[in-house]
Length: 478
Image (cartoon, rainbow, N blue to C red):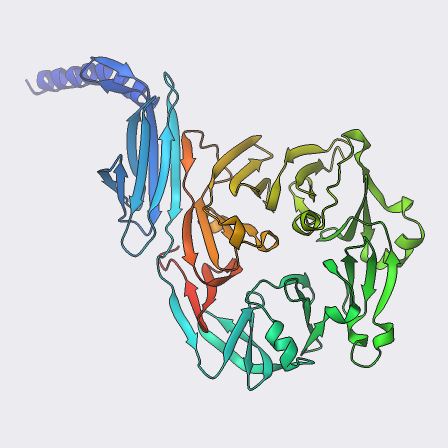
């Protein structure tokens, strides 16, 4: 009798699973069973995981899930627009528009969605000191009793002993803006808005006034540890020996070469780049003076293969259209006037036009990210051949110095961040997957009325506001 019951049980179990297996198969392929119409339908499978977890997820204003550690699974019908909203106390709300193509099974993966803290933590405040600006991720500038100091800082606050800055007169100190210092590497920093140069050399800080050159400087790149190259508004490049400034003003500047439309630099390869009309030159730093004598041997690219770029000669436009060269996966990206070109290592004579009307751009591995003159944000994954529009920023053109816009990608948070001297915008975007079902990314104004260092360091965003130093951090990160 026992064996008879066992045989019946096994046969019933086998029949049950045989009958269920087709439904499991089609469900695993992304189909759903529509009870009302008694048929299988296509679907959009959505995965949302947040850091920290416990965020509320809304679909068209209706709460549908609470995020957990492994990720919440949601399903929507194909062809229906999903307005997804993720909300958690003390963090900024995130919005995404998701839509699956009709008659297709699609997926959308929002994971991990590192939430942005709504408020920062004050880590330093001292009424005796006037906090002027953040130099980089390690040092800040402040004045006290008409003297200028540089000092280390971190999430623990102001660190170490103040380091006095030599050659910093009260007049020069008053010119320092709450603005970005461009890191020219090896302890040289340039603030274009004030025409000042900071230099940390052999353990000491120095401040140099570039206006003493009597040049209207458009761009600066480092030449060596005691000099820089400067491009003026007459298309001339000069060598500025700033360490000669205090005692030997007659040897301050030396003419190098003329008829240059733009200069830039890369660290790998360690080179200085020159743009002249329809040609680009790559010159190793040690060969700069040889370049002035013979340009032909340093030619990297001619524009003859894809048409010469018509130059807008308006000074304001030139100021806004900095020549930039950046390394990208298996090649280089060039910003020439307001255009971006990608030049692969394996096909140097076949430049690829990526975008036009570009204000600022950056590279992140195999991806280009840029902001156009309508403040629209785009990305282009060169490996996946995937170009995407990821949102508009609510920027006031009349109040923004376009030269001060910064765009970066922080991979750990999957964030594209856009910096102005007083605001930080952020949008979640995973550059390494194809999320075609996400048809709308919504940038958010993360930090307002504060100057923030345009780099996130170990998950800390540092900012200064009203003479105080703040740090923004999601403390629930892995």
